[in-house]
Image 1 (cartoon, rainbow over the protein chains, first blue to last red):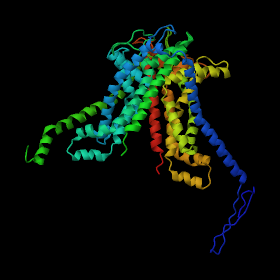
Image 2: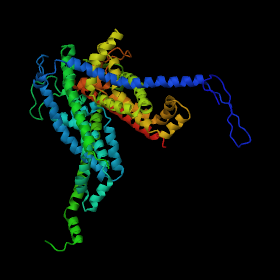
Image 3: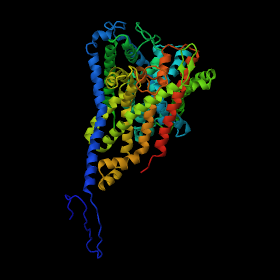
Image 4: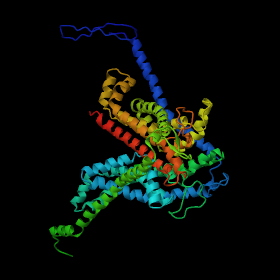
Amino acid sequence: MMDFNTIGQKTFNLSTKGVKKVNTYKIKIDHDRINRRIKLNNISKVVFSLSTVFALIVLAILLYRIGVQSYGWLNFKFLTKNLSIFPEKAGIYGAIIGTVGLMLIVIPVTLVLGVATAIYLEEYATRGKMQAFIKINISNLASVPSVIFGLLGLTVFSRMLNLGSSILAGGLTMSLLVLPIVVVSSQEAIKAVPNFLREASYAMGANKWTTVRKVVLPVAIPGILTGSILALSRAIGETAPLVVLGIPTLILRIPKTIMDDFTALPIQIYYWTLDTVLTAEYANLAAATIVVLLLVLFIMNSFAIVIRNKFQKRF
Amino acid sequence: MKDNISVRETIQNNIKNKKNITDKIMPAFFLLMASISVLTTFGIVLTLITDAYRFFIAVPFSEIFSTKLAPLNANPSFGILPLINGTLISTLIAMLVAGPVGLAAAIYLSQFASERVRRTLKPIMEVLAGIPTIVYGFFAYSFVTPLLMKIIPDLGAKNVLSPGIVMGIMIIPLVASLSEDAMNAVPEIMREGALGLGSTRLEVALKVVIPSAISGILASFVLAISRAVGETMIVTIASGSSKNFTFDITQSMQTMTGYIVEFTSGDAATGTTGYYSLYAVGLLLFLFTMVMNLIAQYISHKYREEY
């Protein structure tokens, strides 16, 4: 037997019983090398785990800093008062109304367009060039930088359709931006509906549309909702397209219709951050607005997770 | 009550009545809705090309490929090189952060971490990916830049280093999760085979898992680059709008996305060359990200090893 504790070179025999010729192997065991390999493994494990934790530490610092900076600024008055050039008097009521207005456009537009596109791709389209083309197109659209969507919105909605920098123009631009997310997640949800449900429906004499409406969609709706909420939270936090549309810096009027100019939470954060050079307190206002924005996103994502866990059926 | 219902008759009636109508109208309606997404792409390409074309006929190519960018001067000059330079440098810094850290995180999550650790860490990573970029921009400007100033005294209040780093942090989850998916797709048999031969986990990761998953890992890097190039708010806030052609990362630089944001916020009037230059920059940005995504798709399809 070999002695594992001895460091250095060792020779030992490996013999097989019943075989006349005994094979002899010389095996060199370099204990130094083995120890080195194990040590390297342990060190790298620590390094790798630290780099995973690094991201989390940054997240913690970010949340802590924003919490500290917004402390004392985030109160009921801040939520219910309108913008002002004086930091002490400023509130984000108008920005909240603007964001809500955006959502009122983004939700119906993306739901109708996204779900209909997904139904077409999964239920109606034949596996041909058209389907492949639309699929490639959607995956490419998902990777176009958001600022490009801003340019599209500026040209088509603001200038050509003459919507200016209204809530409608912003909402439509945002809808196109998040449409791919809704399409892809709805596709996944519809794909997950087992085929025997459709077949059972056809066997009962239902036609395609009835099957889609009464069998496929009800089963797929939790998945569709989860994806739509995630898409919506992307739309709430997105800034670049709205800035490109040319939302004015300071809007003191609360928007009343979807044709009015508006400001939204991320835009307010942007302008306040830019203006910290002039007034230092604007940084606190920006931080307080970020807290509101992150809270809204957190609540929405929690909803998405609850829906996914509670209503999603597994077949 | 009817005594005898003929099944055949009922089916015939059903076919005559409504089956044909909805089954003809609905596919057409859905196709119409699906074509909106195609229309969006065409809309983007069309708007970018038509307005960029007006820029290209107004400005000579020798001026476009110069390092002088001064669109608001009395005698404006539209050299795009400072913007490309700013974009590439900020992307490079971001990738120097996100590449190693993201890959290390992916190796840790797929090779070393226990199932319980994985299940806690992954959702937190996803939270990091879900934070709006404007928040990262604020973080870069109000926290990272002052912090870096303590280390590098002559760092400008607006510089390309700080947004580069923060952008890197932002895309760590992207690199980590895509690379981890690629590594998890490597069959368990290969991993166990290597472990059984006496390899350490590190050796399994470096010599078995990464070579097998290299296509997915590369694709994740390419997507990360494309993401960093298209990122707007972080660089706009923290990198400023200096249009100098410089390689000094402690100075302010403008990226292509930053240029678009600066100019649409009211500086350029419709119909001027400056206004059309937005679309030229936008076209370049669009082409760049599209090519990167096609490369990523190509890599992951072409070099995917089937087991």
